[in-house]
Length: 101
Image 1: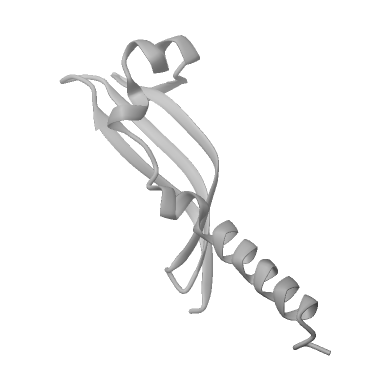
Image 2: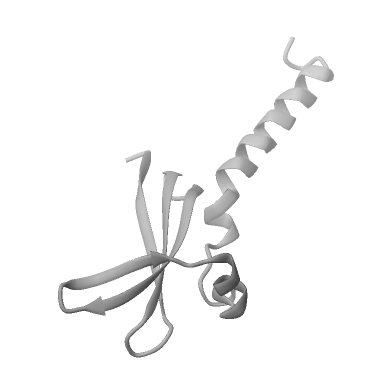
């Protein structure tokens, strides 16, 4: 498979009964170039009916330092944009020097 997409998640066990869940959508090309988007942080609590989730507020993000414990690697977050930018710069340089004419 040359490309793929889907939803991924990562967990951080805040304490014995509470987790923080990082959910995001991703697109990849050959599992090398990635783009992560629609990033959501949620608290997850067990209840008798199953797990309940609620969004992590910006204040809680700072107070509990959630991004220090749970974050997406920069390569998986931006590598597809880096590749496309480098490709655009290369094409522009080749066009400006007359190689592509």
